Length: 188
Image 1 (cartoon, rainbow, N blue to C red):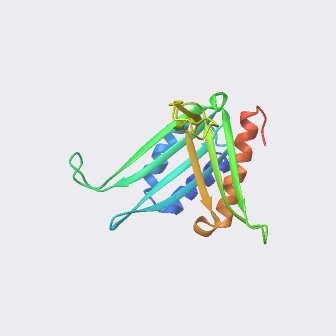
Image 2 (cartoon, rainbow, N blue to C red):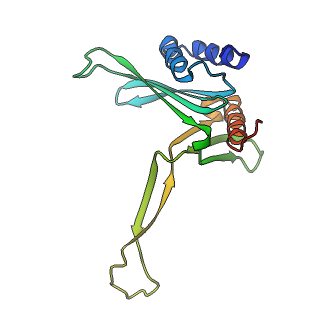
Image 3 (cartoon, one colour):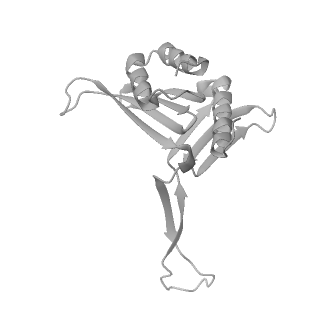
């Protein structure tokens, strides 16, 4: 795991200043000494009433897996009275990845890349959208049941140039290209 890409990943985690030891430990455990082929890191604050909470998501591509590590900070609660962090990791075999969806938002006047969304599906989570079914008869009062769609939506990450910087959006797109190539059985 001591490749230049891995060193760059852990350096970026350290520079973020967001619980670097905790995030790095979660990454090391999830990577299990596999080499890092590509990564994208997203550190984001969220607003909760009168508090700001931060979280970090790290996506890592290894030769055999897509690894997701997500760390949140929490205020004290009934279970843990002091503020604490939680780190969750998930590793998905590349052969299990069903789709890699990339949406790019570009301004029409300047062709400037403004944001990108990466959605990856491997079949663990699906979103169901239902609506009442209708027929073409405007006077029909019958119950036609429901119609809808089932969409794989295991993970999505949105980066915007205005919030994260243009280079972060480009890194997300580079990661998406590398992941797409890896799921197709070739390297980018």
